[in-house]
Image 1 (cartoon, rainbow, N blue to C red):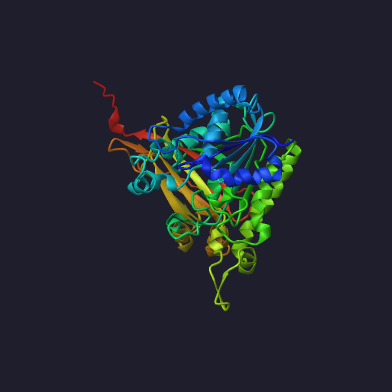
Image 2: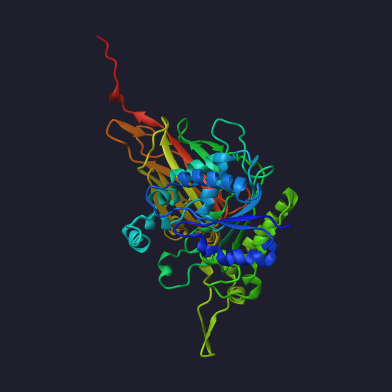
Length: 481
C-alpha cells in the first residue's frame, strides 16, 4: 500500500500550486492514502527558516497525534522547501532515528542558494513580489537563500560534513534515516518576462550544482607555509553514500512540479521522465536499490549533458517549431546543457576573523599571463557573487574542459591553478609575509586528466582559506636602556 506523502512548497509560493502533483500521485496509486500539503509564511520579513522549522515540527507531531498523519511518511519539497526540510531534519532528527520521513524527494531544491535571492531583496523584488504584501518579500528567508550565505555554510556542516576537529558525526541521511533524491531541470524559462532571470546551466531559478546534495569541502591553510598550504578535505557524515541526482533537459523551475504538464515541448519519452523518476523514488526500498537508482540517475544527467555537443540529438529531444511549414525556429541551445561547478570561498585570518578584500586569480601555472587565463576569467568563470566575507564562483565546466585546456600550448601542463591576493587591513599589519599581498605559491584545482580532479561537475564546493596575519616591526618593540 502506498505511503502518505507531505508536499512542501518554496519561497513566495503556496500549497495551491501542487494540486497537479497531488492529482498525478493519486493517479499512480497514492489515492488510497492521504496527501498532505504544507504551507508556511515566506514573504514576511520577520520569519526565518528556523522559525518555519520550529513550527513545522509542532504541526507534524500534532497531526500525527490527532489528525491521521502517519507516524512514517514520505515528503516532496520544491525550491526553498529543500532548505526547510534539511534544517528540520538536522535540528530534530540529526541521527535519522525516530524521524517520520523515510523518502525525501527534492524537486529543484535551492540547497546551495539561488541567484534570484539577491534580486528578491532589491527594489525590483519588492515591487514584483511585495506589491500586495506591504512590500515585504521575506527578507530573512532570502538572506538564507542568497548564494554563499552563512546559513547554507552552517547547515552543510550540520547535516552533510563532519564538524572540524571531530572524526565522525551522526547523519540524518541513509539507514536508519532519510533517503534523499534530487531532480532538477536545466532548461531556462520560456516566457518573455521570466527570461530576464535566466542563466545557462540553471532552470531559471536554481543552478544545477546548487541543487545537488552531493557536496565537497576543503580547508586550505596558508598560515604555516605560503608555498605549500596544508590541505584538509572535509569528511562527510554519510561516508560513501551518494545521493541520487537527475538533471532533466526539458524542465524549468516551474514545470518540475507538474509531471503531466510542461512549458517546454519535448518528445513523450522525455516529457514522461519526471513522473517516472518521482514514482521510482517514492517506491525505493532499501540501500541496495537506492544505490542502483543513484547510478541510473547519474547516467540520465550525463545523457542530458551530451545534448550540448549534438544539435541533431537536441532537436530530437526538444524539437524546433515549424514556421509556415518551411522554416524551423527556437529549439534548445547547446549552452543550456553545459555542466557547471559552484565554488563557495570563505577567507579568514589565522585568528579566525573574516577577510573580505581578496582576489582569486585562475591560470595555467606555466603560462600565467597568456590568452587561456584571459579566456577563463571572461568565458569560463561566468559569475562571482559577493556575500559578505564569502564569494560564490560559477564555473562553466564544459568550456573549461573543451575550450580552456585547448588554449594551453602543447607541451605545457594542462591544469587550472588558483592564487590568492589580499589587500592589507592597514599600514601596520599585512597578510602573508610583510613584503607581499598574496600567497607565494599556488594551488592546482582542476586538471585535463580526470584522475585527481578535486572540482567535480554539477557540484557545489566549499573552500575555507586560512591566511597568516603579520604585524609589522613597529607594532611592538623592546628597547634596551
